[in-house]
Length: 266
Image (cartoon, rainbow, N blue to C red):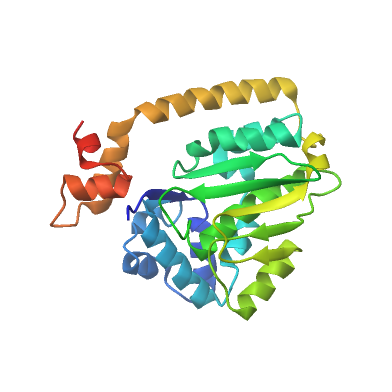
């Protein structure tokens, strides 16, 4: 199975919590095969390494819902144009659609899909080619980031009716997650997502601004078009991440990028 690149914006917050508890985050990064230089910035690395690091950090911090804890600390500015445009949308519907359209600016390996039904709508997140999605903590991290920003954007809140994740949990993890999300959670589902009252789709967020929304969306689409065509930069990043591997070759670079060797050669 391919091991695609994933960008984690919460690395500085994780490192700070580990240091406060007396653990050396740099050592933990090295153990997981992650670049120590990224302690104070977002980090882009093979997903399996980030998943292993998150599991280790959660165990050290004794925080069974570390992904959600970290999501509570992240300002929307960490996600650039995607977050800004979504928050300026005139309705929740347009905000979630914009998230779906522009999510690749944050991480291109996943897809958000809004399903509009009545009386309940759903937002679903899938990672192509992965039966675990982003792993336990990053699945929950992604789910709660969207739900939290939606709750903050609406004066009346954004109550979830239910949620679901791909991974499984023990009884302690189940209780902690359901208490935090304030809804029932299905484990071992085929995707990550949540449902909510479809009437909320027409609600106007606090930060709604039609002109700003149009401007930010246009800027974001321009960035998305540029990023889509910049294959060389992605290849160089993969090379940098694997440079210490004595068996580095086209096939390994292709695996990191989730591409075929022929596509990388082109």
